[in-house]
Structure formats: C-alpha cells, structure tokens
Amino acid sequence: GSNDCGESANVSSSDSGFTGTLVNPENIITTSVCGGVELAWDVVDNNNGYQVYRGIDSQNATVDLGFANTANFIDTTGDPKVPYYYFITTHNGACEGATTVGEFGISMPEATVVEGVNATNVSCDTIELDWTAETWAAPYTVWRNIDNVFGTPGAEEAVDIANTSDAFFTDIGTVGGLAANTQYYYWVTTDHACGQSPASAVASAISEVPQIGGVAATIGTYCDFVEVSWT
Image 1 (tube, rainbow, N blue to C red):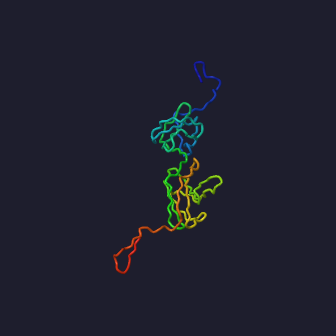
Image 2: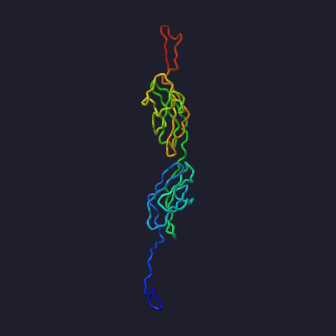
Image 3: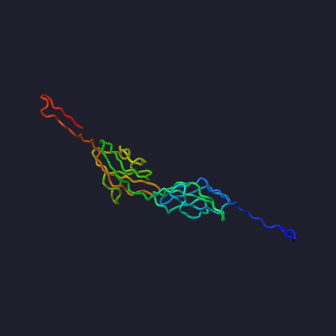
C-alpha cells in the first residue's frame, strides 16, 4: 500500500474470498428409510457447508432442519407417511444461497400387519388368496401350514411359499404340493426397510372340488322325465 510517506517496502500476505452469490447443490436425491428420509446431493466448491430445510410443498421451506458439513443428511423428525419437500442451500460464512424448488421425500413407517387376508378353494389342487394392498409393501410373503400354527416353538412352522408384489396369489402347490381334501392355513407378511411385519390373521381353505350349488328338479311338470338344473 502507499500513503503520503510513499509505498511500503513489504508486500502484504494474500488471502482468498468469495463473491456474494452462491450456487446451490444440484442432483438432490431423497431415499425413504425406516423412520426417516436420507438426503444426498452434489458437492458445491468454495462453501463452508449446507443448510437443510423442509416444507409441505415444493415452493416453501418452512422448517430449518439444521446445518450439514458434508453433502448428505438424514431427517428423522418428520411423521411417517407424510409427503415432504426438502431444500438445500449453501453457506460461505457471510452469505447463504436462496432456496430453490424442493425435492420430494417421505419417511417409511414401521411394518404393519397385512389386513383382509382371504383364502378361497378353487379345486382339489388350487387355492386362491387375496388381501388388502399395503402402500408400503414391497414385497409380500405368503406362508402356508397344514396346522393353524405360524411359528411356535415345538410345532411345525409355516412354510414360505411365495413372494409377490401383488395383493393376491394362487397356490397351486408349486412349493410342497397340495394334497386333495386337505385343510390349509395361510398367513401374509410384508417386508420393507423397517423389517418384516407381524403375521396376518390366519385364512384357511380346503383343497377339494367345490360343491355344485343351486340344484333344482322339476316336480310333476313333465310326464316322462325330470329336468334338473344347477348353478
């Protein structure tokens, strides 16, 4: 520097600085996990960290979740099954970037019991099952036993016979076979990031040829034959 006395003989030490405008992270990725939402994003150079916000729509960041030193964060404060939007800004100590459009994320709930399991006999070697679809089921596991026992110490445990993403299943005995005129018991569980759900209420059906219903015969209508009908 210089003044009325002239220019100094020594050169000052150098330092770096930032402009007042910061670039916010790109490629924000949200991942639903048990009890939370994991966030990750691209690293932004020349900043001191990131501020994480949450909102209930994609335009408004209403909750300040905290500061992150790295390009990842996990939010465990939201309610499960509630849709949220996440916003990431950058810091350089003096300035913070403006929030942009939020990224959708949702926390997974604990695995709950599958409801409405029903078993229907179709034939001597086919039993159809259906149940109420679960929003978070991925996938379902179908269990079968010849006793009404899912898993009790000292007893024959139910066998895992299928995995499916549908809310129905047709048991044709692919695993273990189906014996004719035998009563079978079924349970359904579901698996996701929070683990396996408890077993559903049991459903049961007998592998037999369905009885014909609605049998009717004419009486005194014809003089030389009887007409029989059924459903």
